Length: 338
Image 1 (cartoon, rainbow, N blue to C red):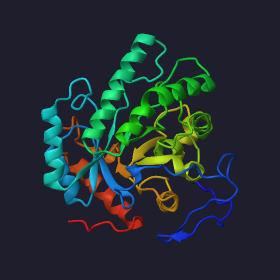
Image 2 (image 1 turned 90 degrees about the vertical axis):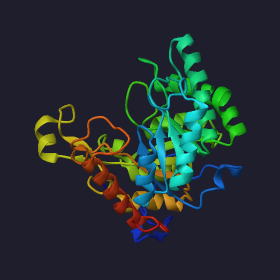
Image 3 (image 1 turned 180 degrees about the vertical axis):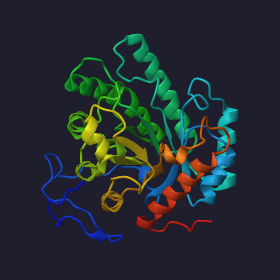
């Protein structure tokens, strides 16, 4: 995918020309930088890997492959309703012993921030507040989620509802805990804000720069939205990134169309259509200092992987290794692979 309206606003970094003039509405004036110590601990982008179920073996593997840390998924193992102080202590100890820090947490499913049922909405808010506290206790700077969804409602209404929850419920707590928060752009019913048009509506209503994006370029490729243009437009609101690629099988697409099956699949970074030098240059230009987390959903590199235990299958481990090796080509100051 291409986006080349001009090069005036970019320097040449890491051998890649990032592209930026002639941007969509709302891109000319950068958003304010996030105040407070939330921006100070990290010297720059931190290469991470997403771990579905925590284990000390996975943290040791991440460190051995040159990852600076991991992103933990708040699923069955790390659910806010069931987490214990003992579990948090064991995670902190593993991070200390292996040298792989807990960069951020993700709580995507089973927490609809704008659930149309008022009882379920209040429950979701209470659960997410516990999740924010858990992220703080693990030393994270960022907590990821989805934006929520109301079936049949307009984007404008959902943006108003989501903005109210952020402004009134979550962001005051984030201020106290010194946390950034943001949502991923994975298209699904409980995540309405997955396009630049929806992002504009939300950010107009939530000026607090602690709210931002967990930007995943792979989801734009399969929607034929240019991820580089979107990243540049919202570069100062990107607090975290997923490193996942998307492959388009053009011969299949030609036969079945976009509503058919089998014409796209997720890949590890470098094996799909994302222009990673350009995307990472956008982040570097913006002064990004969050986590860039490899998300392993590549069916080829997940062969033999059924259910993730304390260790990875050989193919899944290879995918994580190759993803890190590729991304390090475009990131400054990464330590050598072991």
